[in-house]
Image (tube, rainbow, N blue to C red):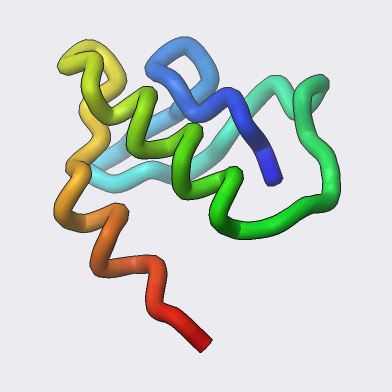
Length: 61
């Protein structure tokens, strides 16, 4: 899990995320934790993360 997906660590091109930088907070863990962090960062408009698209990307196994 990256755990620090915010604007400063995202590189975009043509409206899509191309890269995630700064993996210093990365660790192995449950996808639920990663999803929680992503939705938290999605609350801030400057991160340009779409909460609905994030939810659509996580499907239960």
